[in-house]
Amino acid sequence: MNQMELSFSATLDNENFARSVAGAFMTQLNPTIDEVIEMKTIVAEAVSNAIIHGYNHNAECKVMMKMTIENREVKLIVQDFGKGIENPEEVKTPFYTTQKDLEHAGMGLTIIETLADSLEIESVINIGTKLIITKSLKNHG
Ligand SMILES: Nc1ncnc2c1ncn2[C@@H]1O[C@H](COP(=O)(O)OP(=O)(O)OP(=O)(O)O)[C@@H](O)[C@H]1O
Ligand SMILES: [Mg+2]
Image 1 (cartoon, rainbow, N blue to C red):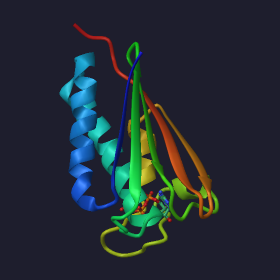
Image 2: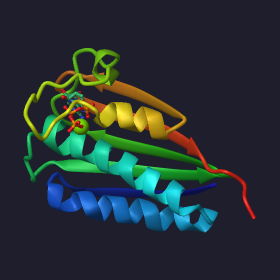
Image 3: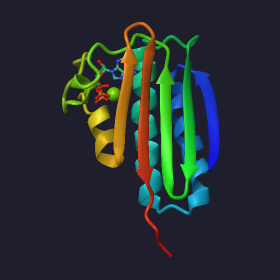
């Protein structure tokens, strides 16, 4: 088992930072390029949701990211202590968004579900939201 934990300010400037850290941490598993791209995409969608929806871009708030590697399974937790979600099951629906504009298709959580093996959402209004994501990497070489 190998684990890392990261806490950073809730600004989209840190989205790339979080993606890169996740990519760097998983290199020990000798992943394929596709697996790295998929994990980075998952992180980007989860982290941007925390910043945009959880915290409404309030950079004084902190996003927490935790990764655990066990055998070839990566477990990723992205957590905010912001607004929370009223119905965590409903938000996974493709095209569901509370921010209907050109930039938000309502596809972030659907993309995570597609690229990961599992996605759990734990959320309490005004307490925050925790995404628990698992993805097993293939055995190769
Ligand atoms: N961390 C969060 N805190 C509060 N609400 C959230 C959080 N993450 C998601 N949501 C809610 O779930 C909805 C769906 O999220 P999803 O990522 O699928 O779409 P989106 O962010 O609206 O659009 P896109 O990701 O395509 O830009 C959001 O519009 C928001 O209402
Ligand atoms: Mg989103």
